[in-house]
Length: 291
Image 1 (cartoon, rainbow, N blue to C red):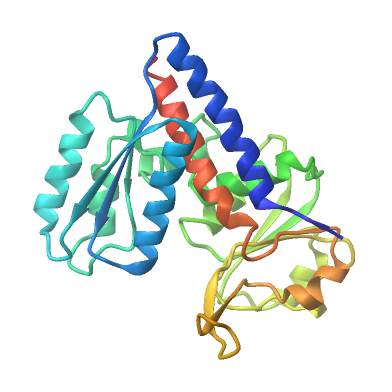
Image 2 (image 1 turned 180 degrees about the vertical axis):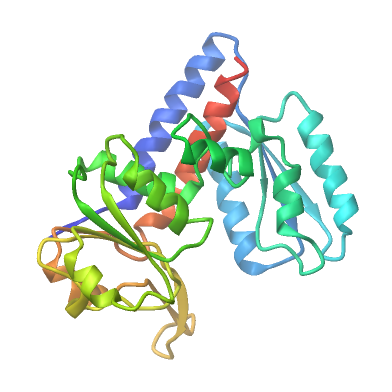
């Protein structure tokens, strides 16, 4: 069993981007610029956005953090996005989800200029992904593909089971794994809460991507020997023995599943770090399109 170290792959990705940005600077070309919009004071969102801004600084990107009050109207938020769309120095726009209940995710995502949609959520980005055209890919699935590529995991002709059908992870992941690419070329089964024979399907899988948000859902009796396991889940579970009062758990029962695997991502330290690295790659690509 080998650990798929997301920290290691993330650092390698960031190191490469730092060199690329240095080259742009030497050539007097435009430097990538990411604008992040944070609404309210959600603790997890603060953490995520803070990490993204720090990563921009680390690799030499420019970044702008726009903080807005929780009670901002949807109309005013859309105006902020329109201003960012019109700013030629901004390459990527990130509106941190989740949004307050009075604001429509769909309206906000659709308002972002597709050429700056580094989150890969815009319908045009998703449509291009489905058609196999160059586009921005949602950061978490993109990050997973970077891990598979880094470790040279053979995916051609393999049976991949994706558990979870969200637009952020499950659906795009199933498209990427089935694409005529390397990594890719899998036969993919997309499973969800209504799937009847989930255990049987998982036992057939050479690759399992668990992205349903249920701690330790995937157990050892659902995994065949030698499978590749990608754990996307990250849930805080109360744990009085921990100083923070909680433990971070993935969607996979790591202790019991890992001995059966050929490869597995840990939680934390697996897919999580790759999400930010993939976002940075998207922002760099958006900038290159202008240079």
